[in-house]
Length: 268
Image (tube, rainbow, N blue to C red; front, side, top):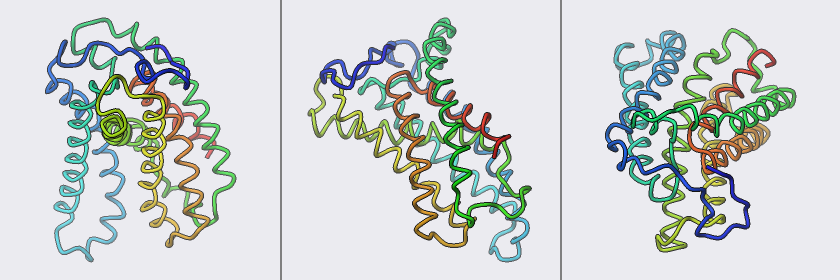
């Protein structure tokens, strides 16, 4: 997949993609593979929530095991919906998960990943630098008083790096791009650069807004500085990940997200 300039025409704004999943592998197989890739992140984030849930178990109307089970099931169902939306709509708007599709089709994965690796690494390095810079500007309310209470690295890598990309980029961004393509172009041709850009920006904003509940839990209140910090910080990386997804495929965005957390973790 070769990147196209922003001024390209509607017909070629989204780069040429590998064959649609239905032509090489069934949509069900692709959906199953992507869902399974996201499940470890669901397990990791539920595991990370166990200590605070256990500390407040007396306040819940249900046993702790039921709360944990329902929390995991809710996230797993949301993941399944996002994966299903992406598998159904992505081929229609030129979005792909080329490495996973190639693997399922029994084709070499290496050549596909080579086209994604460098953009993903560059995006990850830029993301790590951005996270480090943000950590120096974070409002006091978002700085944990106990370093041990910070989110474990395994959760950042599995949930943030993989599951979030499946939820936000593969699911939400794909849906937004398809809706924009249907409304602006009546489903004709390839989505234009403007439609792609709007989908990237709106999905990045939604990605950032999804971090507000965690920020509220940490800060105690969503003050203007807290909201501005969370929205600006996460939207910026969301733009990078969305661009990588649109131009290089889902795996490039995953590589960037995982690497951003991996490289920045020792510095935060």
